[in-house]
Length: 318
Image (cartoon, rainbow, N blue to C red):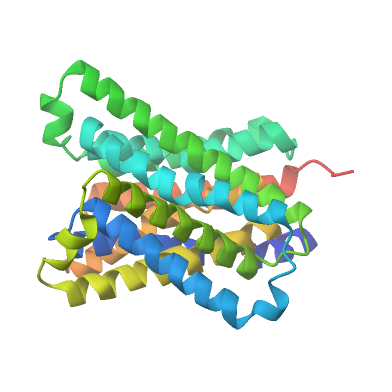
């Protein structure tokens, strides 16, 4: 019983992270007049700017952070944010949204199984039924969708490149999810909110480098952006993405990572998809179809079953 009670806050933080990440499904569709690159750079610029302001406010407790924490945060800023999203967008462009989402939809299972392989947290047979239930839910969720035109008309080489980008994105976030959790448990003196802030600052570093490179190759991203209409809606959208879907989501994910085993934390990622669906239904005043209801039931069943079985059968730690 004590194990179940101690897991509850981690699960709640995991749901909060999913609720914040789910905004990244809705807001880009509301900003359809702007490109994916403009939304991505705006989102992570606001994440970095907000993090920098927080860092300055709490500077008395922040300047003693070791260099190894800053270097790790820079690596996570690429693997968990900029790099992951970059390859995800390429995957959608070359392989199609359905294929990309199906591959990325396996993240909870991949992280749970990989984390268990590295940390030896429970017998692998424990995850058979939860993994199957989540995979069935993900497949049902997207099986009714037709592939985008790019997945149909592109050449085999482009499709292969799209698959490669999808798997690179999958590998990047899998490594980030596992490494970030293990790092926070080792570096207990670094709080989850401070580390989220440091990752945000390092993400801003990557955005500024990207803008510098674009200027050097005569890609005037800022000039093109400022020439567009509806800049007020764009600014509001990227502020929400930067603060809620990035800083708050990263903070909540860090809280989850230090409270749950890597395998259990990995399954919390499914709430990103579920909240993304919820926001979409509310925004479009739509109602889930029978297939979508079935997929949601299978996904939630897999998560609940996985949490229960891991708590029951996890290996004693030395």
